[in-house]
View (cartoon, helix red, strand yellow):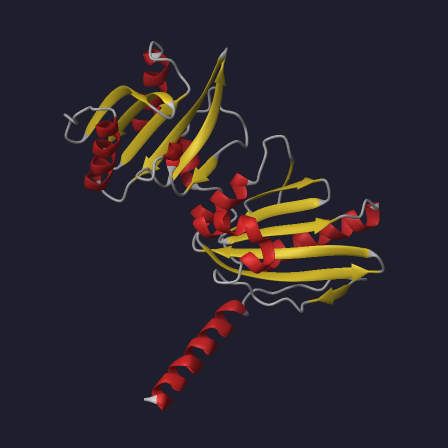
Length: 281
């Protein structure tokens, strides 16, 4: 029995080692690379980012590789977070992105702000940071970013579902993915969100893609029940109701897809219907 347990532990260790070694931490000309950090996993991520760990774990965090690049007093820090799939990777990236940032052609998308370069590619979310204001150091950080994105595997495309959001009034680079507790409800999960500004109106549209019509129907039934509404339609329908946490909600669903709109008044059904119909057509 002891031999079997030891054999299992060795196999587990070898499997983890081979999985984590496929992340390459590149060299940077003129800088000393320091890689004496452990590979962080869900059990010890708090040791590195403490209070922020919960958010990363909510987005399917797998592991984290860290390196520092030093040249005198100048330090550039590299963090490569791996998540379980491309969608949740976009989710954690977009949760820390602002539409006002200076965007770069890195991976699927990246930005540079105040010495920080963040981007995502495939299942990887990369963060590069320096506190130096020297132009040469900032340029070295950009060079490192391009080296990393060239080494990482994965798609350089944004999630395909984003093209389903109507372009009229949509704020650029404001889309996000919420993995859990959409609109604060624990029964609403996995929604893409876009923010809109149309004239004086500001509102948000959520798109949820269930794995089956039955799953989506159950989600709709649960949400409508909170407002005391019985589901009538079998495979599609449109509803407007009051959500105690979020005010007026417009809901439409068809087959596997659910669309929610928050931020519009109850008498703005025409606007809501225009956008929901455009997504579900």
